[in-house]
Figure 1: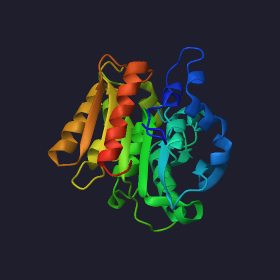
Figure 2: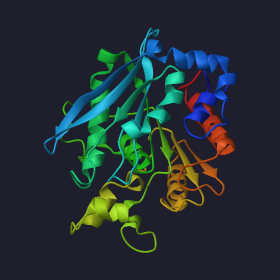
Figure 3: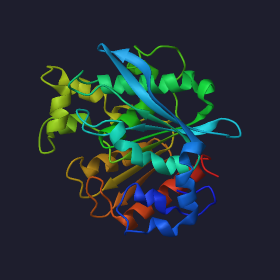
Length: 302
């Protein structure tokens, strides 16, 4: 990722890895940017985009000031196995995008304790429609939406950008705007939910999200990104460690293979020996260089 002046930013690494004490003090331009962040952005917290299961689902908006025209927007979806996590816990992951001058929308969705699958998928689709419907109100560009997330958030980023209207999962979303994104960045997300419900890859978080529903494998198929692989999808970048104990690396490999078969522009960035996030500094630098090139090659970064 690039800073506004075109140099690689240590602040990006600070959001993801621990830097030596005092390292950031040596970066004058980053210090200046960080110290004036409140002047460069306005924050609109807890804006309701949907009421479902008697609960208001909210987004936090981080909007750049003084832009020349509508800003590109990152839609961030937090992880936590669909049963934990919060949008607030992921704020540091938004910093690199704000440093680039992007708008950011940080999404809350119904966790399993509120509503089982497919509620989280439905909510994120509704958040996307809300963003598109309200783009003019917040000076953001609906043609330059990038959706991303980590783990279960990576899965939800994929479904948000891949699920077609014919799936019927956006039925409770107000409005009729067509849902589309410019690109998807998937950080070690689940691509085959049914694989985690039974057999050697069984994961408790997936079982909890599905509960004891008798048709849970049917629902799992309905919310699996692999179900929706087809030509014409937006470009997709997947980042995955090949020693991930939480989401099998094969999920990223299979998505990459299936997307390639149908001609969808996509990349798989493998972190050798990488586990479920927590990548070290060199690994993180390599990841963000890949993201930078991915955005450039798709006309989303100058």
